Length: 132
Image 1 (cartoon, one colour):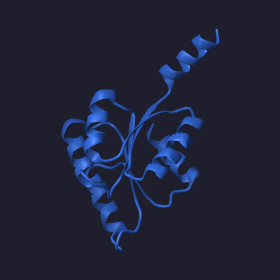
Image 2: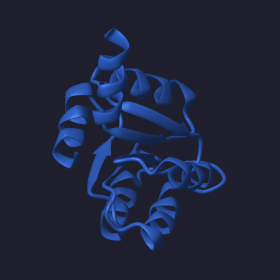
Image 3: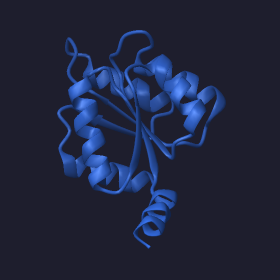
């Protein structure tokens, strides 16, 4: 019986893709989401994020902006080329004083929510709740 309940929960749990090059932040976000009954996949940059998205089609994407390989703005643009519907949350810290510029661009090209690092758990979960 326990196995059936777990399988039912897994089927109804929302799947979130977390794309961030900071492994510690990714792990924190992954654990926070799992504690709140989300299933999570992850990628360390936008290029890997596109691959993961195509393989697993998540219900929501959370992406950092400043990353190697393919940064977040390019990732959002690429994702929007083949998927207009999946909600995206863009997050970034204050990189050389350009945080607000990066977040504004992210919003204009397809991010549904923008958050500034450090993100508080409640703020993060509230944004996810609004989009799922």
